[in-house]
Image 1 (tube, rainbow, N blue to C red):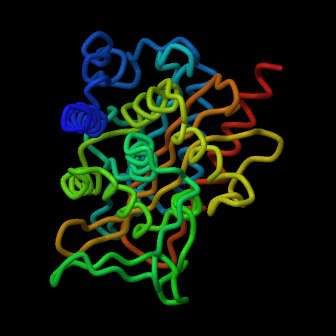
Image 2 (cartoon, one colour; image 1 turned 30 degrees about the vertical axis):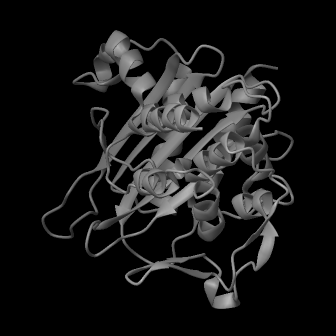
Length: 314
């Protein structure tokens, strides 16, 4: 058990720091993080233009974003097909109310905690815990110790109570995910690493990492079940799924923390069609903290890009 745990912990750490992306980006760094988008050697101008148009629309109309990225990769090869990066100019008179401008692709703009449900699924798989096993999420508040409590998003409505692990993950129950981590001997350490809100990643790394995670072969395929189930009727984000396209992935929102963060972060990762993915896409938008803020604030543009890519291949 110790050997298996150590190996699994190592794989999770690699997942979290994007070891595989680092090696890949070293070979392709000029394609990703060049000094100017004008010299970026990506050939699909039509796709690139679509990404910029959708990103601009979202930042202007939906999120009031100040910086955003989109990345599209080939799901079979992990090759980057297109990326877009926009930033709102800072106006001295009115703050963040200037025009959108093309900017270099920044390497550290978002956190990696969007992966927590999938890492929780991997913990259950490695510990041989069935997705159908019951887990008690209580009233939506769980006290880890005297100074740390976990709250589910519906704690004011009484939480989810006792549900299966699968249901807990599909509903993004933080308590359910925490208890999934605790099925591993080093679960507490893994949880701390996974729930890292430091802005250390970007849309390209998110897309490549999710793509490799989704395609990783396993006998139980818990990650695939959760990634596809989130957008099905039993999943918390089923209303955000595009029509007629089976999507696998997840939306996430990380809101301002007075102690650690001064902005809100909207992210999406996903691949489609889920049964045999052709594309994997990621979208990141950073905006000033304001309410209301919902995960659906990226879905219009994500679905438009998804539908456009699928129609282009018909």
